[in-house]
Structure formats: C-alpha cells, structure tokens
Image (cartoon, rainbow, N blue to C red; front, side):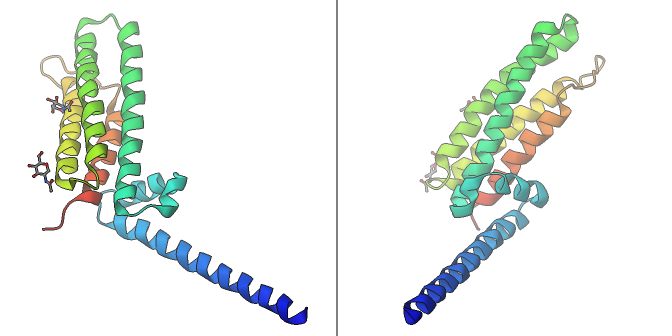
Length: 175
Ligand SMILES: *[C@@H]1O[C@H](CO)[C@@H](O)[C@H](O)[C@H]1NC(C)=O
Ligand SMILES: *[C@@H]1O[C@H](CO)[C@@H](O)[C@H](O)[C@H]1NC(C)=O
C-alpha cells in the first residue's frame, strides 16, 4: 500500500514533468516560429488564442494563422457590403466596390494558401502574396488623386495583410 502510494506519487510527478516539458517546448516552438516573422507579437497572440496551437507543428501553426486571416477577411468583406448599402456618395461607393471585388479574390487566395500548406509551401507563399496584393488594392483605392478619401478599412486591411504576411513567413521554404 505504502509502496504503491509512493509509486502513484512518482508517476504523478513524472507526468507533471513530462507535461511541463512538453508545454515548454511547444511555447518555444511558437516563440521561435514567430521570431522569424515581421510581426512577432501579433503572431504569438494569434497562435495563443487558438487551442489547436498547443499540439500543432510548424505547418499547423501556419494554417492557424492563415485561418485567422481568412476569418478576418470574411468579416471585412461583410463590413464592406454593409458600408456599400449605406453609402450614396459616388466615389466612396466605387472604392468600396473595388474592395468587395478584391476581397472576393483575397478569400480565394487565402483558401488556396491554406490548401497548399504542407504540400507545396512555395505555392502557399505565392497565394499569400496574392492576397496581400488584393488587400493593398482595396486600401489604395481610397488614395486615388484627385478624389482621395479616408479609408474606412485601414485597420481591417492591416490586420488581414499582417496575418497573411505572418503565415507566409512561417512556411517560407529555406533557401
Ligand atoms: C488572387 O488574386 C489575384 C489578384 O491579385 C486574382 O487575379 C486571382 O484571381 C486570385 N486568385 C484566386 C484563386 O482567386
Ligand atoms: C508547387 O506548385 C507549383 C505550381 O503548381 C509547381 O510548379 C511546383 O512544382 C510545385 N512544387 C512541389 C514541390 O510540388
């Protein structure tokens, strides 16, 4: 009885150590992975907010970041469509229409990036850079002289752009 009790304690201690080491190495993987990106803080907070990150490998981490980008792009497109309904001003409406179109492309491009992670990472990077161009096209549409407008989407565009940028940096093939 005494022995088995202490053995139970031993195995609990053992499990505790294993879990701790495991947790530690996974948080190192997230930190190390995010260090290689342009936005390490945002990378870390994005990954830590998803439970799947705890057991993901590097490709899995890239997928999680791209999925966050896809979710943000989807909500941004919804916002664009809402703004389009409310906007009567002609120039602003044209800009928003450009954003609706390029965000449609961005959703496809990010989905393609996700599909290619792990099987063809250079393709994943290619689609991510296409998505980045889509988002920049939206932002720049408000910046056309002589009809410059304040973009109502700068914050959203930056978040999507940064997420696809981080995803691409994570899968970027070495060499
Ligand atoms: C990705 O974006 C480009 C424009 O940058 C667009 O021409 C293309 O159709 C998009 N790709 C997909 C798969 O939608
Ligand atoms: C990745 O996809 C591109 C374009 O389809 C192709 O040219 C390339 O050979 C693929 N690479 C691998 C490793 O499959």
